Length: 263
Length: 242
Ligand SMILES: Nc1ncnc2c1ncn2[C@@H]1O[C@H](COP(=O)(O)OP(=O)(O)OP(=O)(O)O)[C@@H](O)[C@H]1O
Image 1 (cartoon, protein in one colour):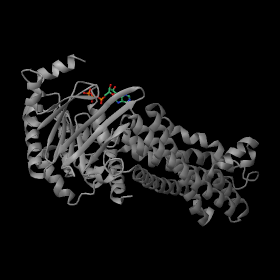
Image 2 (tube, rainbow over the protein chains, first blue to last red):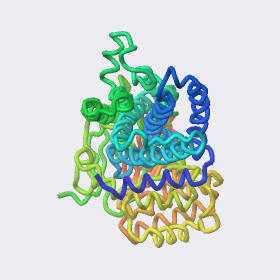
Image 3 (spheres, rainbow over the protein chains, first blue to last red):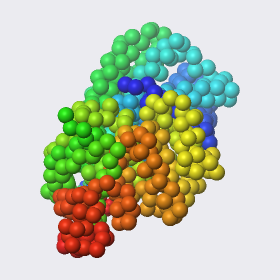
Image 4 (spheres, chains in turn green, brown):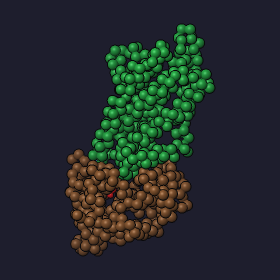
């Protein structure tokens, strides 16, 4: 890995964001809008506080954490799409840049996005609803780290599909993550799923993070089991999708389709 | 050991059942300009892309600086660059930002000084702070050439580098390339559909047809061998034989 090449790609994306309103909206406006809508729903539900304790903490917390995963995935996939739209893949991969360095740069971009979106959402939740995301405590940090990793898994997976199948697969950049939402058990416990789907959800690291968060809020017990499961599954799945990305990259080079992606 | 900077041996590429490049071999010496001629679909771009590591050959080898491209991709590509009328750089960045990203990607030192040199050499001063989206096609061609020369390559692959330039700028570009070759020993593989340019620029020419080399030599030798008046006539004769 050559750090100067990773840095070059990150700088290229920062130049892009610096003067692009739609790209800044992706980081500030849309997460803000998400929060406003869910905030009002939560405020409404809170009027039943008696029957549903902790509902506010629960829904807003879940929403913010879900957005972490979503933006982390987008950070990877959109960075790849930007290169397709700019017809820049040929310039990049005819340089000494390696596919691993390329992925590393998209991961850095993903981290930048997650940090920006988390700050925007946490500040807004606090300003508008008096909601303190740190109610979850320091456990928030490993939760977020795990969700970032799951976002990378979905992001690298989606990127490989787009690289392999081209323009028709571009829509997956926005839709793929929602395929994972029902089995991430963001807003409900895993046990409400039918047993076959529960088995699928169990493999999804994000489901353990949300289970852990609910457990922590309900019992205040350290979510060690959930976090260990999430971390283990994340590492295995991330290794697998990175391997698959490299394989797809080589298949595309063999078919001569690498520089034609998106055409 | 051979003194050739580039050694291509029995290079072939099949896409499914279709053979795009079929057993091509050639060398490029230090400071040599090799012209690659051929009608549409002859396999020129595929050959270029294999030499840039973007397409994996079905068989054959590509060696540069004595190293095999498959095994030493990074070390080789660090010293190679390319330009084509058909590529661009990201539209949403300015000319200078694009050059700066390329310089960083290749780990150049004194980036600002190097960009200043290129801007002066290719007369890009008036539009160096412009967004790339706002360039004319001729300006874009100059920018992609600047990005190719910026990294001090030892081997340069140029796919129709003057196709969209006005005659004055095209002339200047040819002069810059010849100057660069003189000063640094740059080796160039060159394609163009402008036969006069091909004759003027190339030390040697290889003529590709349906993926195979059908003629090789200096422009004069090729013209004499086919008994034609000039390279254009040879091209027409060979292309129409297809
Ligand atoms: N990825 C691919 N899959 C299938 N066929 C391909 C692929 N790339 C190129 N070809 C075919 O290989 C042949 C050679 O194409 P290539 O682009 O190398 O020709 P060329 O000499 O550069 O032509 P031109 O002067 O038009 O640019 C063409 O028939 C083309 O259709």
